[in-house]
Amino acid sequence: MLAELNATQPREGHDAEGRRQIAFFDAKQYDLQSFSATNDDSFQLIAIESPLNEQTVSAAAGCKVVCIFVNDEAHERVIARLAELGVELIALRCAGFNHVDLEACQKYGISVVRVPAYSPHAVAEHTVALMLMLNRHLHQAYLRNRAGAFVLDGLTGFDMYGKTVGVIGTGKIGQCVVQILNGFGCRVLAYDVQENPEVASLPQTEYVGLDALFAQSDIVTLHLPLFEETHHLINSQTIARMKRGVMLINTSRGGLVETVSLIEGLKSGQIGYAGLDVYEEEAGIFFNDISNQVLDDDVLARLMTFNNVVITSHQAFLTREALDNIAETTFANIAEYFAGKRGTELTYHVG
Ligand code: NAI
Image 1 (tube, helix red, strand yellow):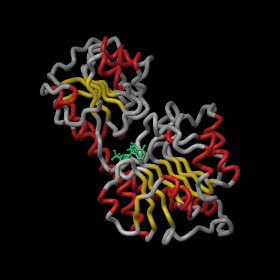
Image 2 (cartoon, helix red, strand yellow):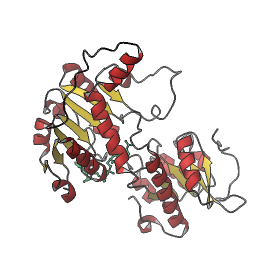
Image 3 (tube, protein in one colour):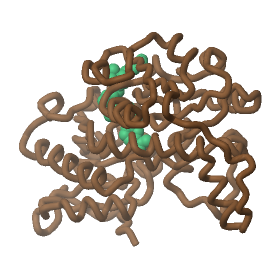
Image 4 (cartoon, helix red, strand yellow):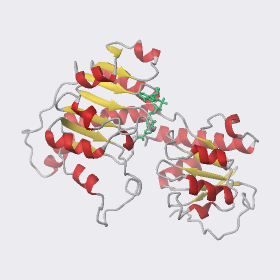
């Protein structure tokens, strides 16, 4: 059981032993294991099972630092309340920061830090796992064989060797994906607003414009952040420009894909496969056990009816190595703050 915080419990930012208290929202057992193993006893984690939002924000009372993950809501009203409670630092234990209102943080004098790289390999390997699972119908084979239906009809895949893969976003994760695909003998078409020379120098890899990437790729995989300009990058128009039967993989952020258009693409056969580790409305669903409840998200429900769609619930990062790196960098970020650094003085500041 997680130690759920009693919001009314008085705190002064540290416990009786002088350990700095951190309000640790959306706490899961795997987080607490890696953070406890890494904690040198300078900090006390106040584990709060609920994600941060307007209803739960008071649980941060007394802490100068809150630690949050990808589906916590740090919009202006929450930030204003955090400031009122005396919070001075938001320590993101993730790379993406699209869910944090940075302007509001600046307005209220709250510093924000993140973990820019914890294991690009973890996400890249999960990305390729989704490609292979869909291509070789492993999700279907697993269920069939368990039911004693040891038949192969409908399970025909394709060789990865020689196929063209479009990689959009060639930063840390995209680069690892390209390197793995090189091993398969794929041809890679890369697109990024800022070309990565290491990627450009890899064999069978070239940077092209988005039009060429969409038109020629058998698989399109997304490794760019979610910003206003990248929101719904994959929509009905861009889907129409892709090869018929294309495989789409998204392990970046759900908002990059307009899900309703994806569903239309799957229904028409324009999209042949979709592997999704993220979903634009995942907050409140992913990371939660709702197996005893009615799923009231009709879009996700429809998406899950396709036998050529595999959904994982934002687990691409989830390796032992990544969790340990997240804990180490987060504690180092928080230690810098307590050593007096603020805002842009912090090594992994955001905004
Ligand atoms: P990164 O910052 O190293 O690379 C992102 C790349 O996207 C950069 O090269 C950047 O130039 C490029 N980019 C930015 N705007 C673009 C645009 N409009 N068009 C094309 N390219 C653009 O980030 P990293 O570490 O590779 O992460 C990529 C994304 O993966 C993150 O933003 C995050 O959303 C997601 N992620 C998902 C995880 C999961 O568990 N599913 C875990 C960690 C990250």
